[in-house]
Image 1 (spheres, rainbow, N blue to C red):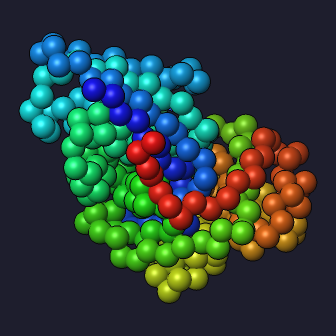
Image 2: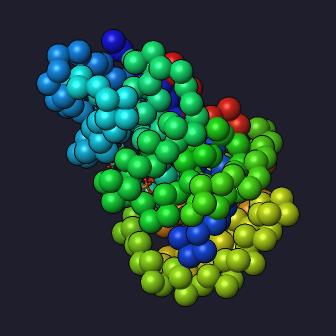
Length: 279
Ligand SMILES: Nc1ncnc2c1ncn2[C@@H]1O[C@H](COP(=O)(O)OP(=O)(O)O)[C@@H](O)[C@H]1O
Ligand SMILES: O=C(O)C1=C[C@@H](OP(=O)(O)O)[C@@H](O)[C@H](O)C1
């Protein structure tokens, strides 16, 4: 029994860690998962990350959680191939767990229950200590595509929307160390609420900018990088997730790349409003 699926990276509009509510959007960078199940009653699950030097603990956990949910003692082999920078704030953990759970459902021939797939993926991220709030904003943007505005603590989607697909999404990967100082992020909660209200009203670009400035300041990442993107014509820019990556949205991504390339690697991609798929 074999299955395969992909899911999306997501850019941050509102990082949910300080207020429990967040917002994210699907980006056209994918992670692919392949799962092979063996009905041998041994329950041995082995994973391999094909193109990155990281442990397979999350993908093995995802397969184990799906098999446990359905009460199956199969063995399994799972592998991933990714376009998504890891530990950068582009929610690779949400993308990988979505893709792996979906691929396992595919291998089992199980009917796809979106909320069940999402909850098993989020459970796996919690099991591997990879999330603070469950990152339901990132998880739903990765799974459904487009923009999601969410209450992560209640696992509720408050609003969904789409990004114009002719916009460029520019991602900067500077050589800074990731910083997930939750106490410092909670210090800015009153101001993140202001930014979140912009997302609720559908003013996502203002929300992304304010959120980016606030979290970059709280996590000691440079804020001038965000302003540099605006100087190059970006509609908006900000820190993505807990960083260190920055994300900008522009009609002409090349101009933003020109000002950002001195800070690190720059990727120009597109929004993705379609979401995860069995492939
Ligand atoms: N391609 C992949 N294959 C397997 N596991 C992955 C892959 N990409 C990310 N992961 C898992 O997700 C973790 C990174 O998630 P996280 O720390 O939340 O960073 P971010 O979500 O900002 O990328 C990695 O340590 C690894 O456990
Ligand atoms: O762990 C969490 O609860 C979250 C992690 C952040 O994303 P990254 O893990 O990509 O930094 C953030 O954007 C998200 O809203 C909530």
